[in-house]
Amino acid sequence: MPNPDIGEARALGLGIDAGGTRTRWALAAREGAVLAEGEVAGLSALQMCSAEGRRGAAETFAALAAAVLAHGRPARVRAGLTGFGGDGEALAPMLAALFDIGAPAVALCDDIEIAYLAHFEPGQGYLVYAGTGSIGAWIDPDGRLHRAGGRGVTLDDGGGGFWIAREAMRHIWRGEDECPGRWRDSPMAHAVFAQVGGSDWRFSRQFVYGQQRGAVGRLALAVAATADSDPAAAAILHGAGVELARLARALEARYGARPVVLSGRAAELHPRVFAAMRAALPAATALTRSSSVAHVAAARLAAKA
Image (cartoon, rainbow, N blue to C red; front, side, top):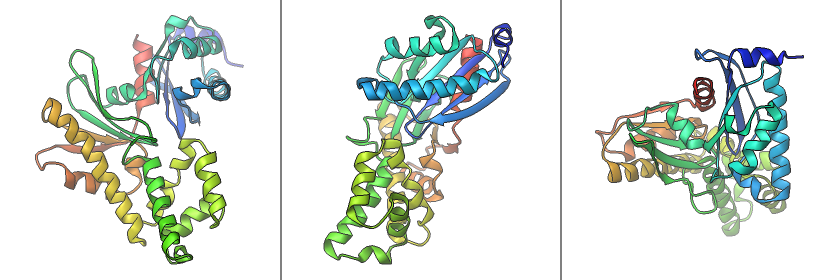
């Protein structure tokens, strides 16, 4: 059993980065050392709109708390959640109760704010994040968040994992409309159908319409795995890079030229994504790629609060 006094004595901070595919957490001491980290199932603040979603969120947070408390009890929590829009009245007490801390010790925000602060100080540059969805962000010197995209997979989120998966499904099934059986000549279709359970439409229908968006977004892995052998998969990943470049260009048009960082799991699927984004941006734009460490940044912010 963990000793609850250890975490309180060291003023540990818990950082949470909740996305559609996975929820990552880290526990940090005040001096910045990361004591533990891990991940549980994906989570979205949008789940709070339904009773079933709230139950799912409670289960995910309970699993996260069990894992964290094996290492220590946090004094403060900083959580970034995809889809967050001021849902703190329901979510903050839920987290506070699990860790036996006061609700004011729980700070919630959109996950993109945490991701931005993992890469830049306010005002420095633009972050383009491609996970299940996609968004471009700039936090100005006064701490205000400005965004491009990030409207959700139903409307857009071009270049994210869900978008890549949807484009692959669209390509495959339009091909079947025109020439039934064409999928047999497509490495991408073979990989996608292996993931959804079969080549019959009922498998694709059930997978796309019966799964959470994060699960659908994982079909992007099948696209990336076949990009070097299937021109259609390569074209989709190239298109993803172009979509992500659009987000950076939109921010540059509004606020001026700044360095751009591309981050997120979808950005790491295949080098074609970054290459296409680089080609679609002005030559003078400084573009780098970074692995996401948002949960660690959130933990350190919580520990220093």
